[in-house]
Length: 234
View 1: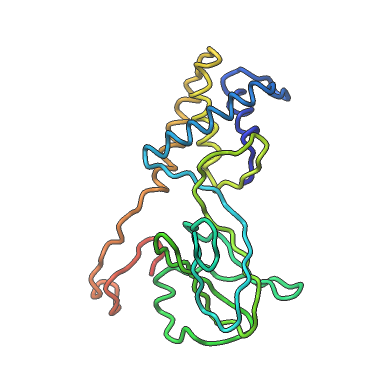
View 2: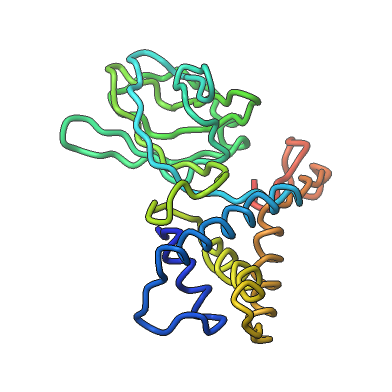
């Protein structure tokens, strides 16, 4: 879902009764709201709560190449992505969707070097500080790779900047921004807003938690593999 800081500021102000339906905040109110929103994002980082947005990018993938590094000073010199949301390859005027693989799925491919005209799958190996992109199958000609990736949102550069947020993030920001704005506008905070702010914050924190992958004995899953990822069934 795409949203601007102004969209969220207006929603937050309406939640506390500081703005009527169809009204637009003044220039000063937009500036104050943007300052409060960015201050809230900064505070959330101190709680180790990462806020993400989805960034669309394209890269030229060389022929006969299976991997490229991505991150600062990498082959693709950009912000290191945290996760691939969607991927596709463009050849001429045609787009070909690519399956985003998990580490377990990538590990199970035995002949990774098979060559073809169309890349079918992509895997992001989350190295740090530079990640690695792997593709299967290896393209015989250069192609354009399109990615939608999760990147950490540090701040909104302007009130009108449009940013694509993963599901659930906009509501969390809106309702928690209402908590910050209510005292500034000397408005009583509705209890329903307080409850929703807390519940959406808990939901996003759960998404950010790295859950350990439990080890299950092979005898229980009928496989020689030593681990089983309950989240993916692999």
